[in-house]
Amino acid sequence: MAEKEIKTYFIYEEEAFREIDEAIIEHIKASFDELISYQNQVFDELNDTCKVAVFIPDEAINSCILKAHEKGFSLGFLPHPKAIKATNSFHIEEDLAQAVDEFLDIEQLVESDLLYCNEMLINNYMVIGDIITEITKKDQQNSTFQKAKNFVQFAKKINRIRPKSLSLKADDKDEFETAAAGILITPHAKNAVISRIILENSFLNDGLFHCLIFSPRSFTKVLFAYIKMLFSFKEKKAQLIFHF
Image (tube, rainbow, N blue to C red):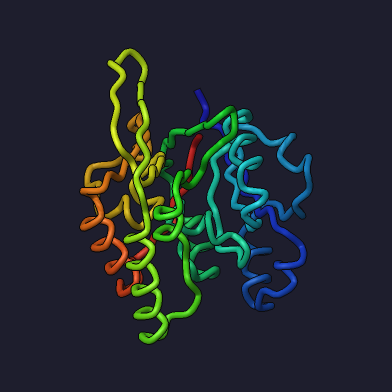
């Protein structure tokens, strides 16, 4: 049986595409079978013979993933300036030219799970509680003074946090009660800084999601995660192509 011929597509948001260096644009035009401007119905004609690179903002990522899951095409994400969440969630290479070359060279797909909450797709993480919101947000100011200031403010917030009692039940497991200061739910450990530190064995296609419940006794670990986040070096990233 003959192998299906794979076609490559570059789907882009026009405003950001116009800001790309001309040499990179010419490289993209020469490398992909088709370049298509992003619009609502752009994915409707694609199928499992399509290898698609998207250069689109965070607000368009969810519908893109759902279409990939429905139509069966493989999907790679490129570093759009307004795709901060996607860049973090899928560990996207931040240099566009390098990301494009890696996308074109990759043949092996990463089978990835999907996580839903109230029938909505969660492609990064979901947080409950102010303390976890604080530790997962990104700060654009990287000076040592600003980092020290952020840490002091964060430590003060921890002292003001009061845990709330709640009951938890998962599938056929027994219900249990605990006190929680915050909850983080993520499909993969790399999606959030704190889950990268706490979770070691996590895979994109393990059929599981992670629910981290932070009790009062977790505060030491939370502080450690926050310090590591503030002063960490950039992680090495590599381009991946997903099949959802």
